[in-house]
Amino acid sequence: MRRIVSRVVKPVIRAHSAFVGSIVAVNTAVPSIVLTYDDGPEPGGTDRILQVLDERQLSATFFVLLSRARRHPGLLAEVAAAGHEIALHGLDHQRLTGFSSREVSQRTKDGRSELEDLTGQRVEWVRPPYGRQTLTTWRAVRSAGLMPVMWGATSWDSKVASQADRVQKAMTGAVPGAILLSHDGHAGLGDGVDDGPPPSLDRGDLTARILDSYADAGLGAWALRESLQHGTPVLAAWFKR
Image 1: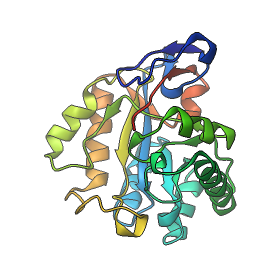
Image 2: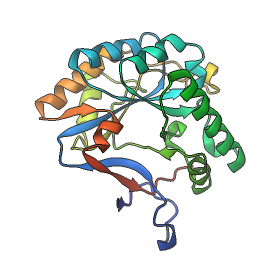
Image 3: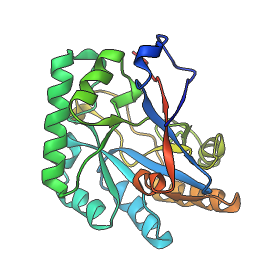
Image 4: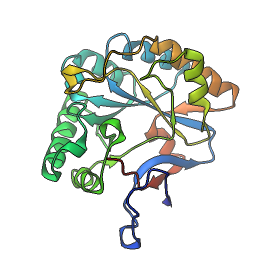
């Protein structure tokens, strides 16, 4: 595995901790982006994205909130039935950095177990809410058997912006193996947080626009598991409280 240092590295990781790191990209020669979606499943978001991915016969990795999966089990089943990869975002959307190491480990284990029971899929990855983790929470997540996955590119779909600006932002850093952060839902009070009102956008339309722009640039898109079949994970020490 190739290890890089990201701009968010705090603190410095010493040589004896060489394997401390989260997946931030895939080292591959295949011209394809890694598609990931957070905060679902959510009606009106997840289903629209699934339709676009089905039309293009593409796969994605969905980082699921259990607080959402319990409310929309049928929609989660649709994601799994369509052949997409299921990963853990959390029991809810609270920052892991607000919990003790023991609590983080237990929440991760519980979330993984419940998600695997719901989907029948093996869960390998976790994306901490807001991308927030410390060395302590990283170790707790790893002790629970999951690997943190972060991102490089983002689509700005959790903030107020035009579709054109979101597509332009998604093109920033769009290179083979880059991990794109997108959302199929918006976390709220039912997910243990108050992130304010959801942005007004058609998530299916945005997905189609982004994928078209990638295609124009000669880039395909697929889930993390497919990407790793043609490359190796790039690790970085990503610590943000």
